[in-house]
Length: 489
Image (cartoon, rainbow, N blue to C red; front, side, top):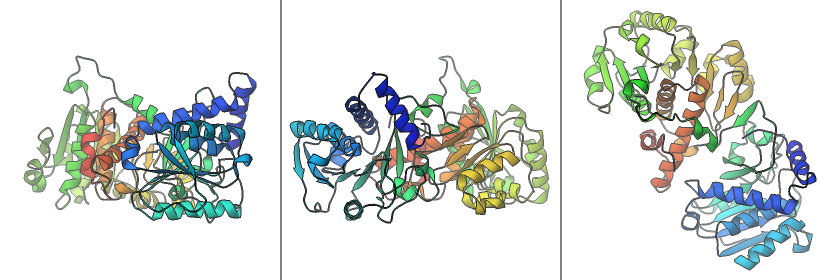
C-alpha cells in the first residue's frame, strides 16, 4: 500500500466524488466493506465473535465514527455498545446514516458511563486522520478510557479506524492521551506519521485497507500488504528439485547448532528444492543427526570446499561464531568469487562490520538495530528509514533492517513490513528469517523481493501460529516453519 499525506487522500476522494462516480455515503460503504473483508481474512480477527465476544465502539463527530459503527455491524455483532463523544445530532450525516443502518440490523445501546471491563473488541472511531493538535478534553477523556478498558483485560483488542485517536497522521506527533491500538485499519493509503520511529506502540499492527475506485499515485516507499503474496513462485507442473533452487549454507558452531538447524529448515520450508548445510568436522556429527532429514549436511575441512558455483543462493552467518583465521581467509576468498546472491546474517554481519569479510556483489544484509549500529555508526543519530537509505547509497546491497516495522530497501525501492508483532520477541526468529529469504532467493526472486517477502511471510507465519496456539505471549521461532508459505491463514 502506498504512503501519502492526509491532503493527498482527501484530494483523491474529492476527485472521485466530483467525477460523479460515487458520493460520500457510497465511499464510506466501500471502505467499511473493504475493511470487513480484510478482517475476515485475518487470522486474529476471522473468528471475531468467539475471540472477542462483545464490541464497544467509540464514536466522535466525524466520518471516522461511521466507519467504526459500520464495521462493527458488518462483522455481525448482534449487540453493539456505542460510546459517543458528541450528541447524535452533531454527528456527520454519513455517520448518522451508518448508525441508522446499524440500529435496524443490531441492538444498539448508547453508553453514558465507561463500559464494564472485560473481554471485548474496542473500535476507535473518535477521530480520523484529519485531526490535528492537542486533544480536546472530552476526546482526551474517552481516549484515556479506551486505553484503560484495553489494559483491564489481556484478552481485549483495540482496533483503530484509519488512525489512532491523538496521533498526527502526517507528523507522527502524539498527544499524551493517544490511543494505544493493537491494530490500525489504514484506509486507502498509509499516512507518513504512522511510520515515524516510536509510534509503533500507538499504531500496533498495520492492516492495509484498499479503497476501491480511489486512485493514488505510486509512492517511492510503500507498506507490505497481502498483494505481496503474489510474489510467491508459481511452479510449472513438471518442476523438480533441481529447478526449485539450491541453497548452500555456512552456519553453526559449538553451542550454536540450533541457529544452523533453523535457517536450513526455513530455507527448505520456503520452497528451496535443495538445501545443503556445510560444517566443519567438530560439529558435523552433532548437526547431522538433529536437522530435518531433507537437509543435506556436508563435512568440510575448509570453506573453500563449498561448491558455490552450483548454488543459486549462499547463506552465511547464523550461529557461525568467529572462525579461526585460516577458515576466515577461505571464507573471504569464497565471498569474493561468488556471483549468486549472498544472505549475510548474525556473525557474518559482525565480521563484515569489523572489516574481516568483504561485501559480496549481490548481498542481502539482515541486521537488527545493534548490528546496524556496528555496520553504520551514523545510524545512532538518524531515523531508521534515513539510516537504511544512506547505508545502501554508500554500500550497494539489499538491506533488511529488522524491527517492529522492518524496512527493506535497495536504494530504488523501500518497503515497510506490516506483519508479526511482540510475540516474535525471542531467540531464533532472525535465523528463520535468513533461511526463508535464502530459500525464496534461490527460486529466482530478486534480492529485494526475497528480502521483503521473507519478512512478510515470517511475520504472517508468527501471526497464524499465535492464533493456532491460542494466543500465547510468545511464539517460538520453530513454530513459524509449518506456516511459512501457506496460502491461507
